[in-house]
Length: 192
Image (cartoon, rainbow, N blue to C red):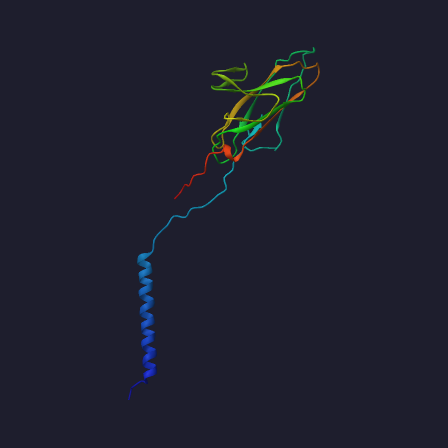
């Protein structure tokens, strides 16, 4: 008559129990699911460089070399000033930088100056207060005069303040800028 042996009844009962268990676990997982934001990590970049160009990307890792030509026809004092930019090409805000400057002729002294307002470069005038960042020779002189925001620039002036340049010569002033990790603002978590 249609009676099944006990072993097949137990198998059928186990299959029904497993099916009920699977469907109730899936339903519970669906009702308990949560959305979470995903944070992505990226590497921060920092640094600074000096340039006479307008690019926010350094074209060389070498320091900036400014020529000081004497084309006046006499030996003596040359009225020299040159403007250049210090660029923060990184992704972090800077709090300071280390500057170095050397003259190719040891009797020449240059100052590297900042303006609290704006430079009028054609007349060599500052609309605010002129502050000397450093004078040559200087090596790894720490300063708060920096392009603070990522992607920003500041204008500085190199000026000959002492010494004479022989006629028909072109000595140079070399300017370097570097930023250490301690001169970068602390990292922050964003997006989550």
